[in-house]
Length: 296
View 1 (spheres, helix red, strand yellow):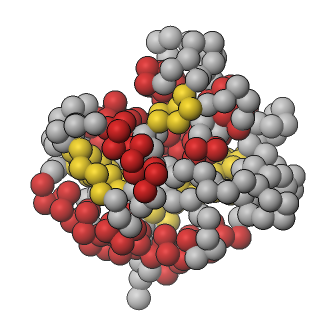
View 2 (cartoon, helix red, strand yellow):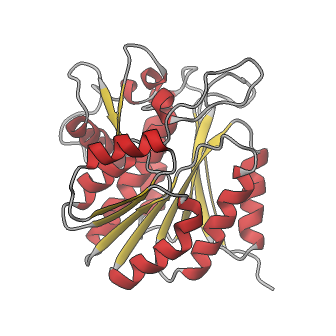
C-alpha cells in the first residue's frame, strides 16, 4: 500500500494511494483473500515466506469519515464472535491489529496482516519505493528479526525475490498490490507477474487490481493467457459498472497457484461481503474465472 499522492481532480483517474483509501471495499476484498490464502499456506506445513512488492506504511489512521465507511466500517461490528468463515477471520484479525472500539480508528496494512496470520517464524520480505511510506513502514515493523525491508522497486525485484524465497523455504506467498496510478502499470504489472510465475516452481501469487470497467482487467487476462500463465480471478463489484463515480466500483484478485480449497472459500466470502458492502442495496456482482493458458 502506498501513501496518497494526489487529491481527486474532476476527470482524473482514481488515486489508489492507501493513506487516502485505507479500509475501503478494495482493501476489504484484497485482505480477505490474502488472509484466506495465507492461512491455507500456513496450514500446508513447513516454513513460510511472504513477499510483497508494494508494502506501504504498515498501518493507516482513519478519519471520522472516508471510504472506509463503505468497507471495513460496514463489517466492524457485524461479524459475530466465533464465526469461522474467511470474512470473520479477516475482521477478527483486523480488529486485533487496529485501534478503535465502536469504529476503526486505524487500519492494518498487508504486512501486519501477513505477520498476524503466519506467526513469528515466517519470513517477510517487503519492498516499498516511496521514501515517506518506507520510513513509516520501518518505524511500524521495528526490529522484527525475520522481516527484511527494501526501499526499491518491488516489481523489478520480484522474480529474484521469489527465487530466493523458494530456495530457503517450503511455502511462498506473494502479494503484488500496486497503485495503478499510471496507465503503464496495466502492462508492467502483468509482465512482472509473468516473469515471476515462469521462474517459480510453487509460489502462490496474489495480484490485486481495481475495477472501473472490464476493459483493462480483460486485457490483462488475455496477456497472461497468451504468456502461458495458468491462473484464476475473483472479482467483487459493489457499485454497478454503469454507475460511474469517483471511487472504486469494485476490485479483483488474480491468483497463480492458489492453495487447495481457496477458490471455493472465496466464493462464499464474496456472497457474504457483496450484500454488506453494496452501495445500492442488493446490487452487487461476483466474477470467478479460471483458465489453463494457451500454449503453442
